[in-house]
Length: 358
Image (tube, rainbow, N blue to C red):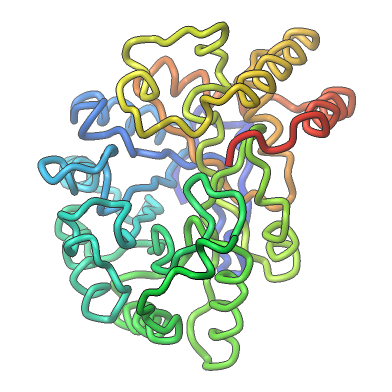
């Protein structure tokens, strides 16, 4: 697909049954337009591409935290790069339509219903900002229904008793399939989705002859392995792999927050909404993983990213960085192969403190 100079160790994985091969690393651009300006973003894009990372992930909502004055700036930066450099056909770009509530009231008044009209209008906006006539992978950023995502571990009474009108998943899948027929998107995926939602979309595609989803973008890291409960079996039997986001748990799994440190430019320090990993259980587990890494002459980043890449269900790991040095360290960490002793050490810690964040 592209000249992979400098990426002799890069591994590639199939995207479901599409025939598309993707690099094991996807460049997440969530900070572009907030913590990174366009010049810094271009520097990262150039470096990533030189390493063989032609898979880039964005969203209509980005950058984060979502604000009316910056909404869409992320896609616009990628679009400006494409306009300057060309090479659109050498890239695999994923974007997302925001769901309701969590993305702010400035996007469809916070009331997204995933109807055909909403999907069409959202794609119009993304294509305009990306300065492209197609999106390779189009994802529902999070479900419309009240369920367990964004820090909720279980589906309980609160979710079950939540009353709201939900657009039929059949209607949403039909709309997405129609967009593929029009050539405006090429593949569809889910994000922040549950086993029930994933299987329902797969069943509807099979039953109605509609497009089958090819990926699920969910959080997965040493502190949150909830994907292994239900979702990983689906990946195995349905060939729908994971695009793993938050692999470093908002930076906690780099070790930079050990012993209470709070670097001033870190996302966790700047924005209070990123508190998912800042609880005593997570901090204890992080320290155990850091000590395990040190025992085996590894950095915590190497341990965290090496663990993810060795899971059978991972199609690609989404890494984001606020500076080029971080990006280089993250990419280099993928050269690490964890031994059976290290993997056993991870399991021992996980048994003592499973999924302290979710």
